[in-house]
Length: 425
Image (cartoon, rainbow, N blue to C red; front, top):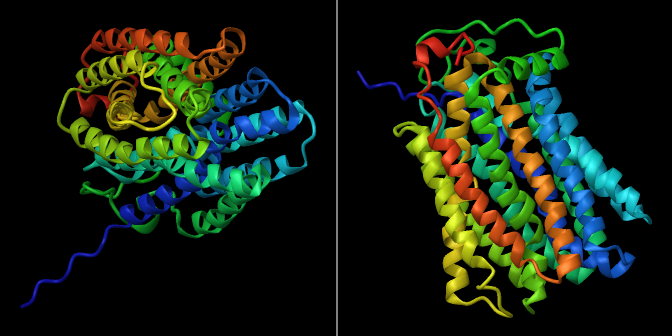
């Protein structure tokens, strides 16, 4: 009797749609670094002023995440994701009408910050936590790479559109991309495996979905109140704040204008960041695979230390053209770009059980708080000193602090114990 062909588990379809949705939201996150110089040229705004709008975006991106995780528990993944994509489209599309810097803050900072924050890594933690038991770390790595890599891979397109057709064309393309993804997310995303009579991927039993939480704000703030009384939360949040400062805040926002200061064309610098995105795919997926097999605390310590070494040398590598030493940095840094996410998500779930996605949302808020500070600080450093060099050195040193915080985490509780209860550490 011939063997029946195994059907593809629905979890993989949900993960694929989540990946596409994250790519759609990532389009805008590619925009600020490529448009700083065009906005400065047209409106005369300083880099500090433009960086303020980016900082508001980064801060709201992080602060929205824990509430978005709670809203997904209350209203469902599909509704939250669709509304988030519509906010991104509105915030990006309406920038073509702006005439003052406060409008840039309102659109780039507030609208898009709220939209992208609702599609942040807490979304990844929610999807993987509901749909996967086996391969959870690997899928977390793939989805994380989708968001972070999409942000960087879009850069050459944004830079080319800005130079060839103006920055408004780039903003409208991003808005259109988010609008195209919204119907797909609504039609294909599903809330829980049990809704389809399925067990999570890698599980044996169909688990009934938990009752919807009555108050998203209460759930989010309650998760913070519990986690804030534990030592691991502060160590994870401190390390992740430095992670945000040294990725989205500094490199993601200021790498292109820093390279331009040394005579490198904007499109060339954007292509280099796109390479970071390509190598990030390999690094983050590998990190997810390792997270299923290696102590996450050791992984985090190693990732932060290696990032610190790379940032200490990058200021010496800028030139008018890409050369082999800069390409080595790009490859090395790309492998480490968001490799920190899978082990951090895993540790939040191990320490805090079912509250893990909400707690990770607050840890991610710290990530974006660090990014917001770094984005503004680096812009002000450039405005007042005429160079970004001090920002690179400070970032490198902070990475070593993050490595120390990570290796000082205590061993997490056993997975069985962590499934339902908040660890009392």
